[in-house]
Image 1 (cartoon, rainbow, N blue to C red):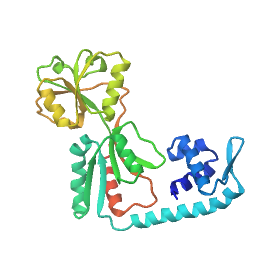
Image 2: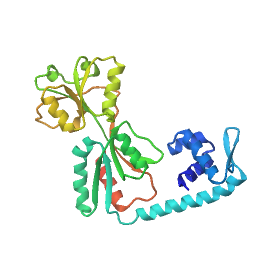
Image 3: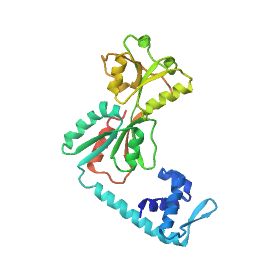
Image 4: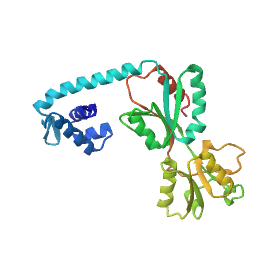
Length: 290
């Protein structure tokens, strides 16, 4: 028997209808309907909820099951909280590549001073996969760059408002520009990160929206490989400003777009109880909030 069905059942009762329950749980409304139907099927097709106007109300059978459902979910949550307070030996962090390479090492160096014996696993992935793994409890933390993230089940700590740079070869005509806008991509050959990257998606959407003609010549998974491609004059790139160091063999020019509202963010599940190890790591990130 899946506890997920009981969780959905209880939330529908608390929310009063399927629509609000779907919002709270971050599910599609069709999933809510399916969960309730499957729960009723488990009990031989017994009706648990019935519609009264726009609200869903418990049937007599539903009232009986509801008291048990709350107890089961409370015991389940208590068991997780008790286990979470035990000694943590491994911390799993999902991160997009840029933050894993350029930002995370500073945090981990400090973290390891206090917890040298805790194993830290860094799992590079796209934002969508990282968020899904957090929901599935396959990760403890996630690091992303995107517009402010909102969820009923995941906390988001905004670390820093990010800026982007367009990287061009040393002999490119744009090297004398003080900033670059979407219009400057007209007729350019572009090298971008792979699909799933949020700032890549933003740029492509802006180019399409402004009817900019360009050539997407390469999609590369590695930031350093993109830099090398630009050095080789294969096109221009679009990278977070923090990933570009001084004295690189290309020029990084600030990208100007007043609608670009992306932040580096630490994500972690909402819970009443976090281990001291997790709390300490969160505190290290909080110190870097700008």
